Length: 233
Image (cartoon, rainbow, N blue to C red; front, side):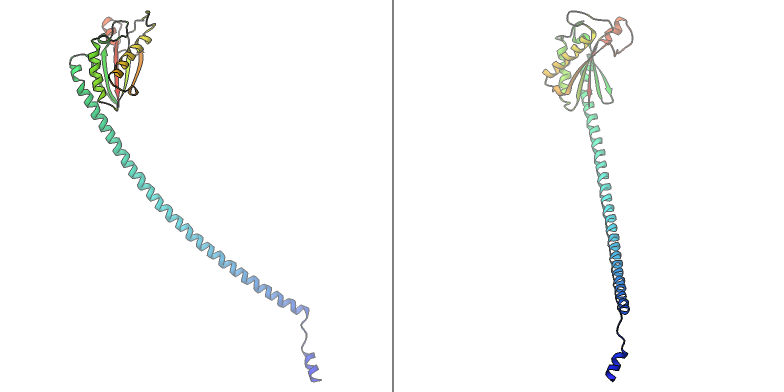
């Protein structure tokens, strides 16, 4: 009787009681998951911060290296520009020295330009009136100029033919354009024959569009009939 009595005094767990225990277990599990997620999130933020700091340091190093390289390149470019300018000036002075004899003999005129030298030759030394075939006496002058130009392999040579303002029309040349172009071409051909690379040479006819002096008298027209050789560096 006593045993049965004791069993009766221990109440059986009801469905309500079981539901409360399961709810407590689920709540504990959820709290544990939330704590774990918070920990993972904190670690991710921490490592992300470390990654960002490392990126910043790497970028700073790269920027410093780039700045140093740019500075070095600028110094190198400046040095190259100075060197090239000095070489061009030395070449220009050398050409002027070689042309002194022709200049002193009044066979040519020489004018120093910002980028080189301009050589002027009276057309009467080179051609008969209205013609573009070189005269025999022109060969010595042009030969000396060609010799000087061969020593300037880094220069470019532009030969320009100029006429006066009197219109020309004959069986060979229909206008001053054709005449001036033919005269420039004749000088270029001679330079090629004298050993100057054709890559360095160019010829153009200017007709009467670039007069040396303004005027229509005989003296002015004679001065305007010329060939100019522009040596550029």
